[in-house]
Length: 399
Image 1 (cartoon, one colour):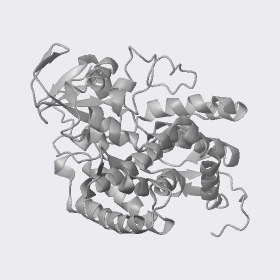
Image 2 (image 1 turned 120 degrees about the vertical axis):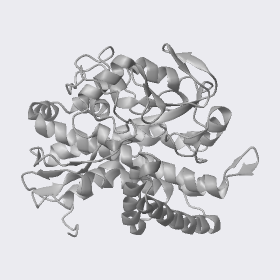
Image 3 (image 1 turned 60 degrees about the vertical axis):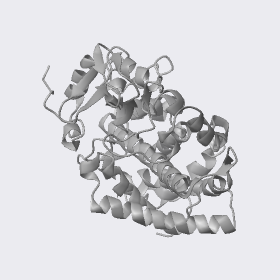
Image 4 (image 1 turned 90 degrees about the vertical axis):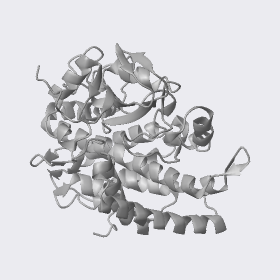
């Protein structure tokens, strides 16, 4: 096995190309000290779970992106504070609440497919994959259609900053400022005229008799927009690529659509759209034979955990028969910080694949596509596909 000990886990170049060797190496280490970035990495499945389930020892309150200051969104809260803030909106993300969105999501997917179905080709990321989750999360938070292209561009900027302080460029800051301006405009509107959306809920909610601060509103909104769009678009794109590369699996799904739920969950594992989140040690602790000091940062490395050979047989094979109820995938985290939007992401992926299989079942990826250059997220920024042209469902849809 190659030695990766000179690599920097904060450097996007570390995660370019085939990372299977690195993931296996990290997983064998289980817990690794990265001298280049001066932080720890929990890399095996069990080590990631151990960090996630112990917020008293490894807390979130100093931030989830290493080497960057925290912000006041609920992802950076633990214990009762996290539970109370999350509790404001959790009823909107339960399985029954999300299930009620299925037909609306299907209509959204079909409308996007209508825009390209007659052409026989498109960039899946730009035309479909990025647009589905963007539309749904913008509707939920209260961002009208006219603002969504700007929000889309801002999200692409935010993600680049997730690689750490060396990547928080002027363009990243400009993206945040632009989104912040829109957010303040919408806050003024919702204060005057509340609507049935998340932003109105946050603005008018109280926790222990206190409303959320302006910073809390901004960062809660920002976190929800990023989390609600980036995860799903990356899983969708990865699934489209692997089903193009392995048409025999696509044929099974065409023959038996009941396998779609299992295929979607395997795609969530196989893609693992976020590379890591970080925690900070609250005390000196011995962990997997290492002495971790109070204040040390530790990464939870999700791809290595999701490809841990001790938990997943033949992990680099895309296997829709894999039993993922026995061993849960960690793409959405674990414990109290398990992603609040997991049910929504799963449904969006499943419905997207379902409609693609119905309406353009012979899609083929042309070329390798362009992958995101990041040490934070994994996915495609471009994925050209071709397919047999078809007919619109909505004959009145404008090009």
